[in-house]
Image (tube, rainbow, N blue to C red; front, side):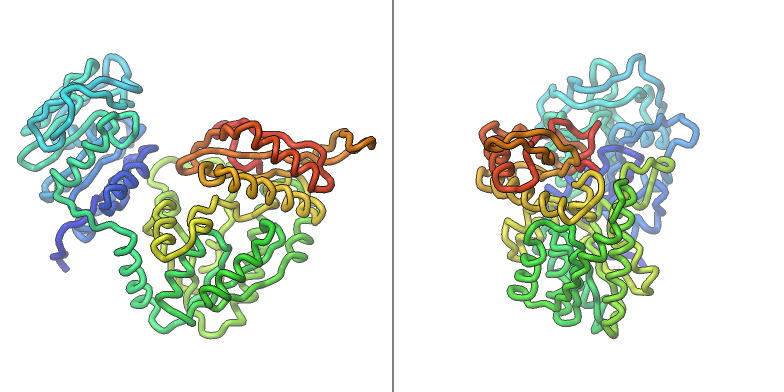
Length: 517
């Protein structure tokens, strides 16, 4: 059936760019919806998506590499504006009939570009501006109907434009902050070239999502594994708005949660939101399963398997359930599609309930699968959740088990919970918590000699880990003021029995990871 609705949003074709999610986010920051697909996306699906415009991302390949990703030439005849970025420009130029060749020298980093402003893409852009380049090929012959609209010292064609079919390409990356007027260029494409409307708001998302859930689930029952984090909390509230008492939330206390976490979840969901919350005390079961285990991968897998068993046992007690809800986000969807590259090395396995649907025979409902993390936080705010929850820092699925190096024991957990609570408490008091991506304590099984009063001590070490980041993919260690670190150290050593030394982690990601395990 032909899609007769007005074109809306931007379709991003991913040619393997490390910046593809950034492109999608930049579009959404301008309140325009974006969707990411692989180059193999069919014409039929593109027509069904019915985008107002298409963006071809960059990528690591050369257009002449064996197996280099390409696209169906018929895309250019759909009457939809197209913008190619870096590799996206080169493959666009090649498929349209132009010629691409290796550049005399690779252009990487900041580059000055001269713009010709008599085109809608560069309207209001300075005649000369700094951009970010990352390429080794260049356009040496334009396709028929295309005109050069920008140049750099390294290439006479840093951008081109076909005014008849409204197809354009830029050799630089407008999505990165290093391109001085990149956001202006993207805005010109969205609103000047494609005629997009600013309809992507979290209020409209909530209204549509609630209706979608009602339509899909109907009067059936749904279960949700509630962790108390931002994603599962926002998922629970959206589902509760749509389904009411048909939603059943299961919270598993695995014993490796933060101090007071179980009480906080019970208070929020039972007393304030008043939804059906089932709390399972499985602390002893998890601690027993972790006994004697010090390998971080084994710890993660044990916690994942045990969680699934506990969750499944409880879920079977609820009659009439046909759906399982998960807090899957859009980056998870993108990464699971594996558009490019071979098998990647496992840095660390991730703990989620992804193994449940197949095993339990339940249909899946994922209220947040269209959203990035920052959008989930905005939805939470729109739903009336406090900043203390919507701006809550990420917490690993395996909890404190991967913040205890070595074996997880109740004694070590008790020490870490108290120390971590002090770190977070001071971070919030000193207005540091919301300025960092994560700040937390790590228990090190390293004993050292200390002196308390006139006595010799031989006790454990706590490391303070604090990082700044945009998305967690890369991170820098946070420059916490010395007086704050001093206060954290003093309180931990004085108030947490079993600790006589506190250290501060000053490593970035990469080469380190944010979590120690």
